Length: 381
View: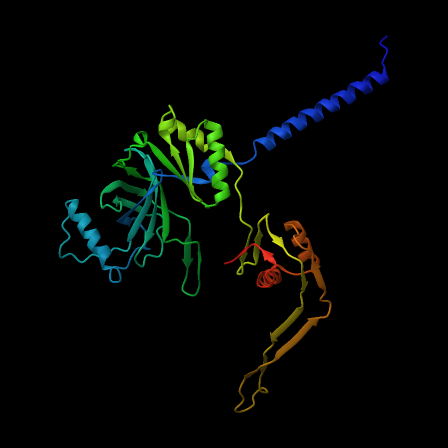
């Protein structure tokens, strides 16, 4: 027979709970220590960017939704030139195909793209074609700003929208005159950029800020040792690659994964069309009193039809206008006092306590900003 000791079991359970709590605390502490944003998510690296490509081409195989030749003569000219290059003489022939559309092809050549790699392209109709769905893009050279051909695109077009209808009604969804060709362009020419030969690189902050840039300089120097990073201005940090024995590629890979706590400006973004309000965590409001009225005006049109008696000579059916206008002004408006230096959550709670809608809240924020009590940048879109 085995004897059980409740006291011993209780002590074991308490010790286990304490160990679990200690492990949880250590885990949370490690997670907090690792909190922050990577440098690669905050900056753009000098020389590491994409290049825009553009070309003019034809999409064939459309089901009667192509360009009208009379409205788009350039489509006929491009098709004639294409057929002549393929050995088909169409000079003097009267052909009006409705399954061809002239398009502009755009793409972005990524940094360090090599010959033979594939990139996505976007195809957009420039004529009166009603849809590109089901079409195929014919071989189209893609030029960069220097006029050189860097890629060639070809392949089936995937259009997300559709359009259908009859004699009396039609329905459409999306934009059927714009489509994509996934991996539809093949890179033919590489960009002449020798990254390994660089002696210094500049990191450009996407949101320039002196505090964030200074923190990034300290974090990079602490992680790599020495004084490789140098703060130039609020939006630029220079890396001196000559101070490290690592290659530029290895050094940048280390710098990208350094975590930084970015400093954010106090900002309130308002979208009047959708009634969306986004408030930053550092928004503060000085002591101010707020009163929100509620005025509602309703106008309803109820037209009535007046018809003559049956078989009455000279009778005429007329529409008699009927308009109902009602005005409701609530008397429950209250004056609320917002204490100085309230936090974001306190501000939102106070505005919600007034029972205001998002659009009314937009007007309140504008008024608070005009009064000088909103210590944040107000951006109205």
